[in-house]
Image (cartoon, rainbow, N blue to C red; front, side):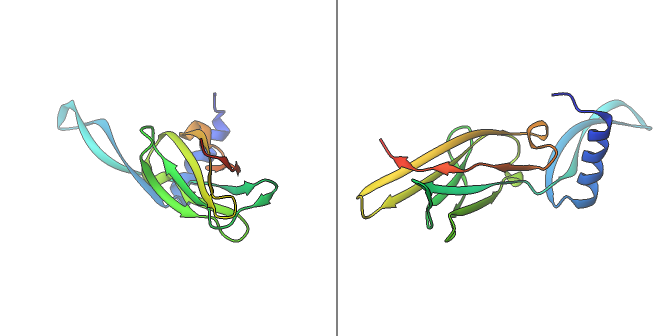
Length: 144
């Protein structure tokens, strides 16, 4: 995906004015008194970025479902629960870029079965632009 110059300017202004999440990035730099490149650590702010949506069981939003943010190895990075309207929201920028999975889990006591579902996405500047936001609704199904 190619960004236009206007998109790049919007992105940079947004980051420097409104961003709250900091990510440490190591980049090569050179100084006037040293002709060799050195690696320096710099902190760049990126916008607060969330994955959010509604967890459904059938056609109805499901309250009290567990929602997890997983990394490439399926390790839990963050966890939350849906509210009375089935809504969840997890801030993802503190965990950096990469392949992510959002997973919902709910034990239905009336059915005596665990319901689950998951959706994969890639967190990067290119996929988050321009809203820095991922809206992913999840439909619970019986776990295998």
